[in-house]
View (cartoon, rainbow, N blue to C red):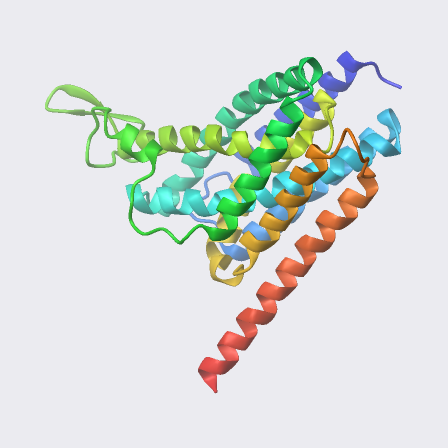
Amino acid sequence: MLDSTAMWTVFLIVVVIMFALDLGVLNRGEKHISVKKALYLTAFWISISLLFAVFVYFQRGPDATVEYLAAYVVEKMMSVDNLFVFIIIFAYFQVPDEYQHKALFYGIVGALAFRALFVVAGVRLLEQFDFVMYIFGAVLIITAIRTVIKKEDNGKESLAMRLSKRFKSSPDFDGNKMFTVKNGVRMMTPLLLCVIVIELSDIMFAFDSIPAVLAISTDTFIVYTSNIFAILGLRSLYFAVHGMMNSLDYLKYGLGVILVFVGVKMILSDHYHVDVLFSLAFICIVMLVTIMASVIHKKRVSASKTG
């Protein structure tokens, strides 16, 4: 059995290899990713995440493995919801399809750093102050309510988008460059502004996702690795969701139910223990029911239109 340092070393090596594979092989020279290819790539990334779960099983045992899987599923489902925000951001900045891949890459690199800070801070807070558990639980329940009742984008700008206007930037793209020169003045391109907004948005997402995962486990290794594996395949998942976005009508309701569940679980943790295996089963069932309900609803809508 490997010690903690060796476990982290293995994880970091896997992440570096996956990034190299993603950039150098899977998406080399890609201008646009079809929905079919995006789904294949998403399945590949999920398979890698499950293989890492096998590694966790042999090194940490079944309990840690169930915690990893439950945390991974929660983070993956929240990532899907967050991808709709990315779609809005790309539409706002009018980023061409061929440049979106690069913007998402930098967004994921930033997420690796931000999540590390939030995970360490969250775990330390829970270790030092018991009442933080109740705060995190309340945050999740509020997030669940906000997720369910939120309306579709109505054209209003987010805080991150308004902040981006404070930067001196060019109105035009210059290929996939982050900076350009206009009349002898070096300026940011819309692509760099888009990346900045994605990074700011990911910080906001972390406020929701990290407490959700900490409700399942306070093991720094489990929390961070499940988060990172969930976002490693985010670029492929984005193009899959982008092409199928009209088929996930009930996603926000399923996500709302899961967030309420983990929020209540967190608040009651001092008085009632919910088995992690039960948590994993509940989360998976809600996710499957959500997907099935969305597919059935989509078919009924299509049938009514053709009829």
